[in-house]
Length: 127
Length: 373
Image 1 (cartoon, chains in turn yellow, orange):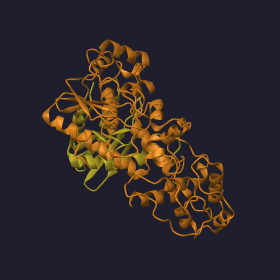
Image 2 (cartoon, rainbow over the protein chains, first blue to last red):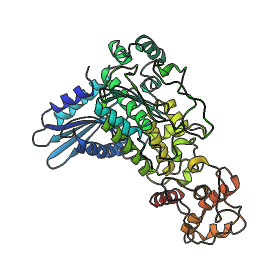
Image 3 (cartoon, rainbow over the protein chains, first blue to last red):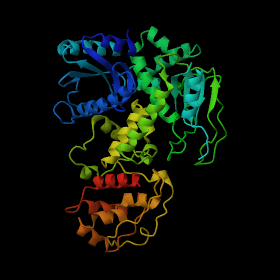
Image 4 (cartoon, helix red, strand yellow):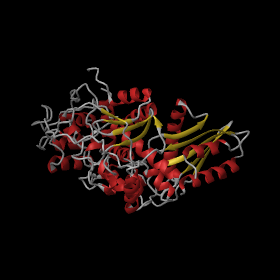
């Protein structure tokens, strides 16, 4: 039964991952961080990522803020040298959290990383 | 300003010493465990128990049972996880969020106004309050209305929280996060009074909303819970949501014009010369009404916000809406506090006239300008 730190540690073991974080998109708080984002600069990176996550989550996949619409599950950001992968957590209590991976594009397998991240997210919130 | 230490200064000093104990400030308690912040509690922030039970994750009976059986041993968290009531990850997530939520208030600088109101009691007798600590400070004598306790922070060495160790956070990170949250709220809508005043939905909201300002699902939940009497803190507790998240939604709703903006500080109105008795607009720009200290605002400026007859808004709208200006010259009563139907109705009617500018946008511009004075 993993806690936050174990979850991030396992995330760092995914091939190609350079940094991992657990962030609250309402406040921008980094509840946990590992790897390249585990220092002060990482807090700013978490807050910026949280803005993007919040906009995407609140807008919904079709850009309409429908109250009963599809909740966003994950976000993939592709840059020339890197991937950023965000997975929203579904908890049975009120929360606004997502897991985030920063990956090297040459080393990472995006599909594998996305599936692993989903597993980690599910295990973190289950009893 | 005297050299009196803030709660944050004391916390950092104790953390550097590796202290263990409970730091009691005016608005909350921070529990240190060998220099790390292990817990935070505030009457203004729902604790992990409220969040877990209100969300339906745990029944209140189960929570109470855990507290009753393991509270004295200071190991309620471990009890819950061992008996499979919550997962370890869930507990850590919930606890960390509640810690920062309470720490925001515990570290609230006394120099900021308006400060969140201290409730009459720290929820004694509530089943979710947890067992009383033997070393909890006794409640002080009741203070006259409006007076805040000025006792300095006290540190009870060795005190531990009944939840037990979950996941401790460095003290510097807690302080940084509290500062960051304060700045974030200010960027959203620099009107601290909405944090402490009852949340009142604005019935004319649809007329003010524009593209991109429709409330999100979470904001709609807050709006639905607003009955005109509940403060954001009450709504947070009702929804089982962090108070900060609720404050954030309230500020966003206020910025978009969905809420009635309360007067700053709630003091009795003292409308200055341009507002009182002078119902005739003359289009001159607003004389400086705001005092030098942000976020303080004079009541003249605040009263003006509500009615829309403010010199500032007149000045802004002179070029845009000649029709409302002419209407005002017909003896509209002088601006009054929020709640006066006449002036508010006149403002509302004028706002919806042909070519009337977007009121919520003007409010936001005005508030942003004042915040920079």
